[in-house]
Structures are given as C-alpha cells and as structure tokens.
Length: 289
Image (cartoon, rainbow, N blue to C red; front, side, top):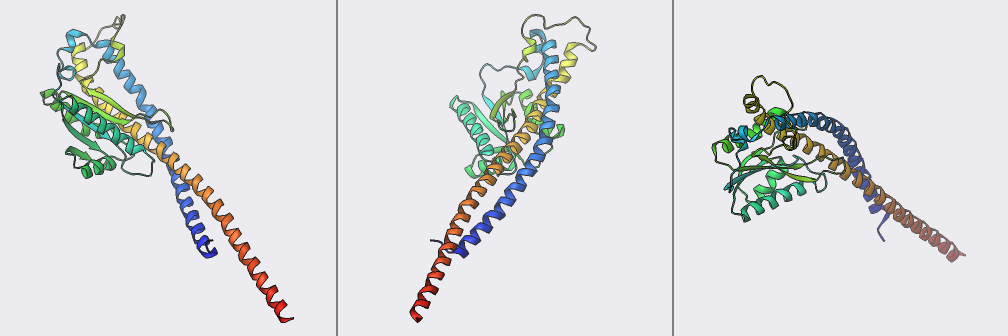
C-alpha cells in the first residue's frame, strides 16, 4: 500500500490541477458568452445578404459574374481550414483536421488538384508535421475575428477563382449549433451557390432597383463570400470555447472523483499506521510486565 506521504503529495497535485481546470472552465464560459453573441449578431446579416442575392439573381445575370462560374469538370480546388490556436478543448481541433483530410483525400481521388490554406496554429502545426504542402498559413487571428480577417483569408482565393486558376473553394469550420454541438462542417464558398430564396415562384417582388440588379450583384457577391468566411470564423471561435468549457468541466469533475478516491486511500493508510503503532505500544508494555 502506498505511503501516506506519497498520497498526500498526489492529493496536493490533483487539488492544484483541479484549481487550474476550474479556472479555465470559468474563463471559457465567459468567453463563450461573448463569442455566442457575435455568432447571433452575424447570422441575420448573412441571411439578409442571401435573401437579396436570391431575389436579384436570374440565369441571364448569372452568366455575367465570374464568382458564379460553374466549371463542368473541376480541375483545381482550394481547401481553407479553420482551427483553434490553442488546445485543451477535447477533440475539437482533431475533428476539424480529420474533416479537412477526408475532403482532400476525396478531391484527390476524383483527380482534382488541391491546395491547402490553414488558419489556426493547431491545423498549421499538424499539416506541417505531416509534410503537407500549404499555400498559406495564418496564426494571428484572435478570439474576436473581424471582417478584415475574413477579407485577408479569402481575397486571394476569389482572385484566383475569377482568373480561372481555381475551379472551387471549400471551407472547413466548426458550425456552432450550441455549446455542446459544434460539428465540423464543409461549405463550398466558390462558386457562389444560388441561395434558396432564388428558387421557386414569386422570388421577384415588384420594386424598382437603383442602380440596376447587375450593379448591385457586382458589389454584393464578393461581400457575400467574405461574410461567409467571417461567419465561419466567429462560429469556430464560439465552438472552440464551447468545447473547451466542456473539456475543462469534465477534467474538474474527474479531478474531484480522483480526490475522493485518494482521500479514502490516505485515510485507510493513516488508520492502518495508527493501529500498528498502538499494537506496538501495547506489545511493548506487555513485554515489560
């Protein structure tokens, strides 16, 4: 049986670990609330953009915009992966990396040449370790992504798609459903997919456009692509803190269970030592009689 001194050292170590995990859980909970607010603020804007595009778009106009180009046989595609810059979030980053690897494997199996773009230290370090060639790697996007961050990530991809160097652009990110549900998701951002509002009858209301629909679409389509990436950034940040809060709560609970087991073992060892000392004293007294 372990010595009492060793058990006391293990108990102190677990207590210190539990303090750290509990603090990290509280910090993640606080940051999750702010990140969730940003997600909720971004969604209505994205929905309105999609609605406007859906109402303006028609086959005649669609042929005028390079961002709507639909290649018959994609030859080259880009994958943009968003991960966290830090760990201690369970399988959050691992799931995103696995999603990106499966997408790359599927594209290559279909004969599509691929290029990889990564935003986030965890994804960058993994693919660098694997020897995967990355076109770009970004690690300076913080917990509060901005529209400028999204523009920096996607502008090069839009230019290459417009010039014909790319035929498709896929985005891998964590969709934020709730703090407990942040599944890795693949979204094709280019070519721009026709929003649902553009389908069906009655999509063209009776109003006058100033300037015309083609000028409006020329400005809105790039904005829609950038906003899709921005929304993915804020959802990934919220998903990271949701996963980290869950992981730290589980770690805190496990540390509590371990403390209970160690304390019981320590008490048994201490009781056994005391019993042995009493027996030795009684035995010594009896020997003196």
